[in-house]
Image 1 (cartoon, rainbow, N blue to C red):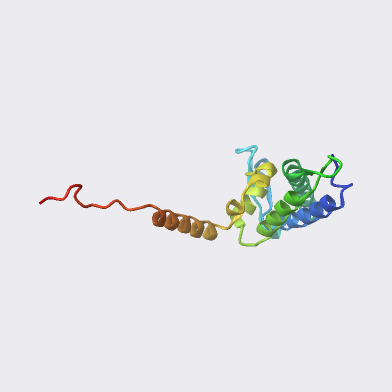
Image 2: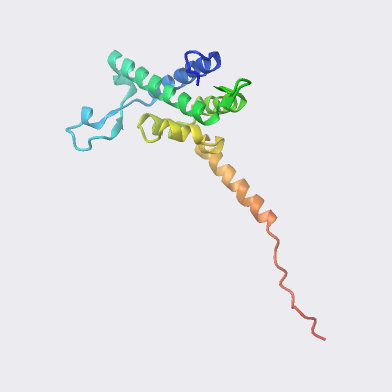
Length: 169
């Protein structure tokens, strides 16, 4: 099994994921509740104002983003890697396709709901690795997909005829 440092494709993907998540973590910074309050809700994370970020906060957020991206890349590799000619697991087409789908969807600024779930530790890297593009879509797109699926289902269901079973003569 290769590591992200050895495999050029994985190294590239990891770098791109780290960039993407650093932007997300900076846009929606969260801190442990115990750091900001008097300890009422320990273990939870609360959103922090981006204007009040210190350089230490930015360094911490960058490290959190790197850790999250590293764990996500490893999950994607574990799930989507394929054996190469020698039988060794490598970053094949499924891995690359998943990476493209994730970076395309997660880099969009209108994905605020999923971005906040990521930064508040409401969602784990493995869950993201398994999500479909519909799951990663913004709320408006999800609603239109549901509506189209409902319409398609209604068109595919045959209506029962409401005529008498036997002809009355």
